[in-house]
Length: 369
Length: 81
Image (tube, rainbow over all chains, first blue to last red; front, side, top):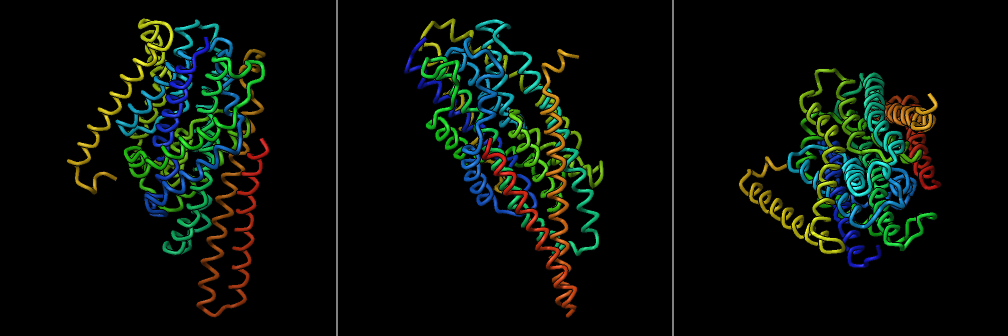
């Protein structure tokens, strides 16, 4: 099926998802820097946005995994990609509403897998790829970040135990500018590529790119990098509050080790081509940095809520992706179904934003951040 | 066993774990050494122990250099992928 209007709608939806990915995941990058007062909020999100943009140009290995390793490229159609993106956007906005740091990556993969399952059946899903490249790394990565941050904070505390807290704190706050920068770069490298992969899938489905020689076009890289950077600059303050203050009360050394652990794991994952969740990794790093100090320093109830959101992400996004595809098809073949869904989705998002804006006006200024 | 091997790229997973551990813990430890070096150098300078101050400053410089090298190496590895 070849349809330029539908392709434009799918690309626009993919970039909208990329924007939500940026503002949803801003928290991963800036929450620790803000929590320890290493950087002011606006400076932190400004640096994060610029480095997310730069990071998107560094590597394309994750984009290739998304485009070719999860579902059969030949089975993909534009309505399938569109429905998957709606599922991912829905889950991102729902978890943002409740202030839960869930995985944008898994929402995207879940949404696409759900719509493919309904449209083409289970044979079109590469379950081996899904398990080996998404689900198993999803369990290993936060554990690795937890272990890295936990070990790092133990060694760091031992080394700096006899220093006065003031100068040591200043040193680690300065270090956080660099560790946070590396994390932003790693986030751009890993996350912007997921949208590049999906847009590339749409181009393959529309016949603009050969399914046998999948390559990400330059304009896709620039557009995805810009969307994630803009989303990052917009910031997701609810999730920043959860990650920055509600899991552990962080000191600068913990902030530095959590960010360094997160950056190391995400960069290593990009290196081997796993589409990891920065959110999972960063939450694992923050919990590890807290537990390395003492286990009771971690608010395990908050950590449990985050874990439940993680477990629900793939199935919930898949369910919305599947339902969206079914509704799209019920409305009719071609462009009409996706356009109707897009109008409904935009109206729902605007209503949610307006409601949130009214809530913010009624909250005292100090409670917002 | 062969099915598990086919599904899970064990080598890549192992690489993910050991590269993360080495890089993450290594950078944090080396940076902590730099913080110790800078702080002790300042204290020694204030106490007019110039030799100690110079040694601690050298330690901090070497540690910061190692951190810088780690950052550049990380970015260059990503850029060549």
